[in-house]
Amino acid sequence: MLNSSLKQFSTLLAAKKISSVELTDEFLKRSRVLNPGYNAFITINEETSLTQARAADMIIASGRAQPLTGIPIAQKDIFCTKGWLTTCGSKMLSNFISPYDAAVVERFNAAGAVNIGKTNMDEFAMGSSNETSYYGPVKNPWDITAVPGGSSGGSACVVAARMAPAATGTDTGGSIRQPAALCGISGIKPTYGLVSRYGMIAFASSLDQGGPMAKSAEDLALMLNVMAGFDTRDSTSLQREVEDYTRDLEKPLEGLRIGLPKEYFVKEINDDVARAVEAAIAEYRKLGAKTVEVSLPNTKLSVPVYYVLAPAEASSNLSRFDGVRYGYRAPEYIDLDDMYRKSRAQGFGAEVKRRILIGTYVLSHGYYDAYYIQAQKLRRLIALDFAEAFKQCDIIMGPTSPTVAFDLGEKSSDPVQMYLSDAYTIAVNLAGLPGMSIPVGFGNKNRPVGLHIVGNYFTEAQMLNVAHQYQRTTDWHFQMPGTSKG
Image 1 (tube, rainbow, N blue to C red):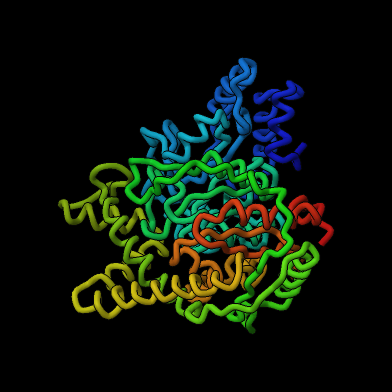
Image 2: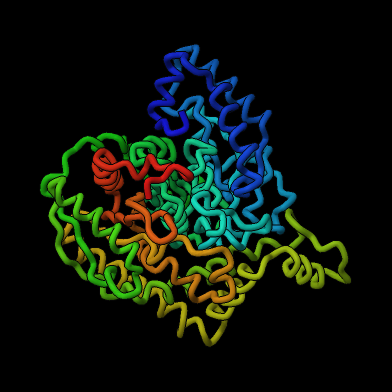
């Protein structure tokens, strides 16, 4: 039951072999047992979830069920959810009950899915390890001494530990793909603008994108069918025809051109990760794909460019948290200015403060042209690199992360090393391209390895096909913590 796909759950529900209430209760019981050890959920409202499940059972009984009706889905705590605590992993929002639903939550509600809980995350999505959360770090279910990745580490953990069949995440510089890789699950960041950002608490608005996290590519396709779509409330939402992301899943890979950037296979990648990725690429060759070497020469600039642009946008977005309208307010202060200072100093964690300060600095008079404008120019060059590479290939592949999951606390004192954890994923966000990670084996200490798949704009259906065909011939995505073959 725990390893069933979303499609299999849907079939069981439709055949009345299990009810949504029974299914939801099963995952709630499992979460009750496992969550104290993993710290993956911030909020679980059992009665609310079971009420949704009862409503879903009525929809199924009436014959109006959709593919995800009655299936429990965990929501990253960055998505505003009406009547639920929505904290963004921060003390600043530790008392905020959202009065409305984010567009993503609305879409899952309309599909009849059950919200099983809000998942832990790096504070305001700022982190690569899920150690910056006000609610404490999430533990990797494969090894509780290791990080799960961030910022969507809670979502990755609940899927890997089978505390939920699937979850939502957000990705600003790799925050869906990197935790998916470190926890041995699948995750996709769609093309920028494909999923509405309405009600998704902003970190860096030109980079943030919501996406699904699940066991398999097939599950991701079903979730993306729900999540994607135009939204007039989001000025960056793209108006496109509705797609069925499951349509190409069974398409053979004969003739597929896989681009292997020479910049991705360098000394920075650990040997255990390289071996697993190379074995996965060899499997693709057996499936009929051919590989070509491509170059992304400006890849090395992606991390410094990102850490100019993202903090600049964060500095602007987080200015609204001032202790006046909602969120945390310092209990004692002298005047208005003192309230601002103390509320922000006490409400934000160290990493958020660091990024606000960096962002304020690069946007300040005298430094705006030298840093921010230059970073935007380099961002364009990074996007042009991908455009040139896609003239030679259909899909780009490489490692999602240069290492397997690192130990808790290992990089906490060295922000630069922490930032380099996203070295392979950041460029995709800067270019606005879709990217995904799928599990392809295990490395040191029996910790999972992820394969990074990057497509051209709006090629999510092709990427999901590429991932699904690999998962038809391998079983890495079925491995569960405690049962891995390593």
